[in-house]
Length: 303
Image 1 (tube, helix red, strand yellow):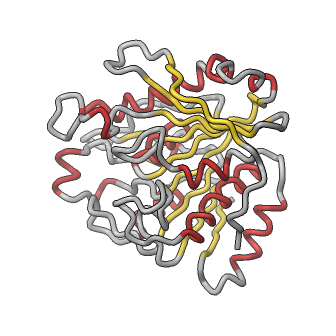
Image 2: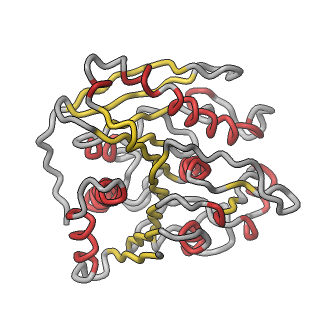
């Protein structure tokens, strides 16, 4: 299993305001990076509903040992107080996607906020990662679409800069939404048939969504319904926050387990380094470890 030891010093800069025309509230991001290293790949991370750029530190601190991590605060963050009954809520899913596009299109200006970092980044190795609603948001940049009420695929929001991605506890297909989800979260009807970018899907085997009448397998749809190449990491007993990935002792965590959080963090890094042709050893080690993990986790590969 991965360890919790850190050896790399990090820098974090916030807030950085990113141009986002038409957005009622400024788009702000947090930048986290190692203090040394060259040709660093990039992770743009999309948070779950209600969170912000200040969450997910257990993941970000580990990723930033070898990646530059950019975290936006989406409009649905608690700090913006936009609830389900707010007329702006119906379009937040589109604003979330626009947020990620704005970050990628202004990446040079964001990196320039950290003196010298812009010369240490490999702009040809950019990835997206998201958790829960953030997973669906990130998935659209990987090629997934949103079905309308008639089942017709919507706009193509894929971004040419994105080379790979990871979707954590991501929305499944929309045929089994609960009445509440169908009424308030109509965008939760993803079409993964066009998501061709290499992607790792991470699912908890104990994750029972309040938004779907299906069981934990709902969170594996992004793997099963998309074209290769895809990988699926399933973690035994893990629930929606997979041990507490949003932060230590946060209220939403129902299955607190620091080792599980470390597994998620290191699996993301290992997969992306492999997908970007930077390092295959960590992902290979994780694959080999699945066979001797006492069913703590399993990994499937498609294509």
